[in-house]
Image 1 (spheres, rainbow, N blue to C red):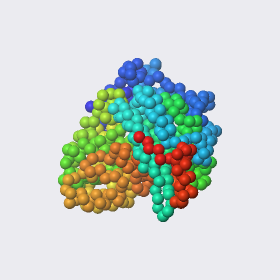
Image 2 (cartoon, rainbow, N blue to C red):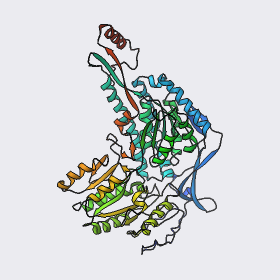
Image 3 (cartoon, one colour):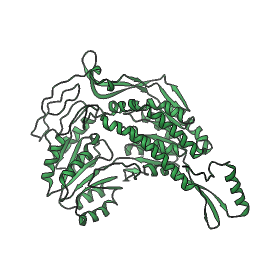
Image 4 (cartoon, helix red, strand yellow):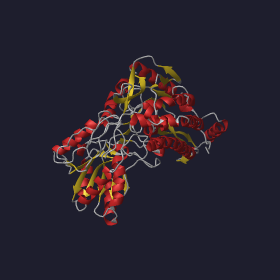
Length: 559
């Protein structure tokens, strides 16, 4: 029997065309004091925001932050758990933060953009030390706010620390390569990378720490200044880090606001001051914000957007291994990853065997609360997501599909058990939309050109997983797939890591590249000092280097 969702009953509904009704689920109430002590939450009053190096007190309107994890209150009624409150900031606060970032950059004359690389790195190392202090509270908030299981929550925090340290090392390497003069055509050139200006940083809810910092950290380390607004879900976990940002960086380098994007991001973009829009989210949001900017040619974009990553299973694939990888690929964090496998193409010769074994594996997955041991499936953090997934299922059924796993589609207030849909065709919404949740469409194919053509016709092009072993078939497929997506995963699920590898996408999936090395380049531009090879100029350059009067012109070698 499927594990119970805390505080709710599963509805006794039969999905049309699915002969297996949902089993009755017993009701279980949980009071906060019944939850293991180390995971209990007291509401957090987030009443500070960071602007111009000051943690300012907020006295305006606030918004309540809830977890979809159900708990009982004093009168025994269950519902979403109140986690705290955040400022509901609007235009005035947005412009205040923008002015602070603009002042700190000061048209490139500010302390931060002109600082020596070694000094900026020192600030970043200080931040890492201070961030580590808050590991436990941030992890606990990851579990409550976005319902990520304990193991993955710790991984997200630790991976973020590793990412920052790797970025520091990468910048050292980049700077060492620049600590020299090139000579071409009688001209000496000292080529380095310089900042772009003021950054608006908007992160996603599914990785509110890691993915957000994959934007913010390389942006500021390259000498840019930033305004950062956390995602709607996963917002409170930034609050414990405000002090660390304040104490680690000069005033105005990092400015952190809370509230709705349309109230904060929109007025900021309308000023035309923003030089880079850094966003991980939906393409509609990115396009809307771009449209608000009055100076299109000035605006640089660093975007991580939707994906519809397919898994292609060839006839000779090792099914046991393939199913293991497809379970991880489709349902890690309930499928709420841009790198998740969003559709599976299975050759017709093995479709029946694959479906049987895959459905059994899905139905055996453990559902539980984030802190429960070995919980693979956890509640969905978005209140309306179960309803949305159910609508996708109903639409697919309407157009000829069926839910082929026994537990598929069981729905509660905060969860819908993963539904495996087969057969799936292009009349269905789930065929086109990035579902970003626990529903797995499966398509049977006869000719390999069927999935290839579908990939070519889609608006997305991030990754693909290819399962098989015959190199005579795999080789040509790789040659084609490499031109349709930006990462081909051989017999493995799609993923971002390791973070040193490129992370990008074609078409509507990404703009620019986010990885340890590439992100530094995405948030900077090559700039250089040129000098003709004359005795007069060479003496000046030598004196300039010896005097240590320029932070830009330097052959200092960072160890």
